[in-house]
Length: 335
Ligand code: CA
Image (cartoon, rainbow, N blue to C red; front, top):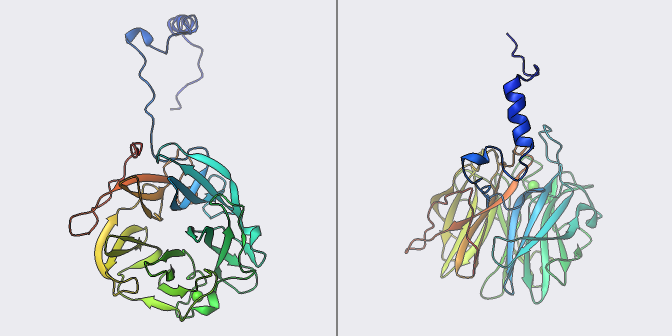
């Protein structure tokens, strides 16, 4: 039997409503005690837009967060992504939004899909490596944009793609050339890692816009899906990546940026309500951070309307990383 929820209120309910209406200074049921403050959820860190595929850059005491912008309407289970977003923080808790510094339209040769990216600094210039859909060479591609400031404006650094789908032919999919991550080693050699189903890597020339040698593969990463992120801490290099699908994050370690990479296991579990996870790892003001996305914004959040989160990352004495504990509270302000 259908419940009548719109029936006329009884006299008692009507009286209660009038009493509440006549006491505007009190929260509902305030007579029982002081109203509790709303819990302030630290995660997701951005609540007014859907943000995905985070990358972060530490520069002169500020963290710059770069993310894709999920714009898929509610209940449309597909990626709608046209631009990237940029935020900055001095404490990892308070985030300032900057005007979108990069759009797919900046790459005249691309036609769609502002997918995962990373920005790094070299010699005072900021290089933004981004996956997009190529306009004429079928499949995904990686472009590079450049700016004099971490907040842009960024412009296409080449006028053409750095990586196109036809440069890697072993994977028989059109989206294996995505998810770039870039690192400059202590000798000044830059490396680009990327991939889906196969993890590729290549050296970059000092100009950061051309490959410097052949495209290689990392073959020691079990269940590699996508989203490599390479970072260095102490004498260890770390290659973290999305493992299986739905994605967990796993990682490998090496003493050399060129490997061999030794698998070390899982780092993060499936991130709530999202089939992707997409980590970035940084150190800032003496603390290590794990930045990722989940689909936790109610009620339409999910795999195509994602949200960036930050939790702390901890290392063991032997250099291995402890399993990340994803939290709603997020991190405390860095000082
Ligand atoms: Ca390819």
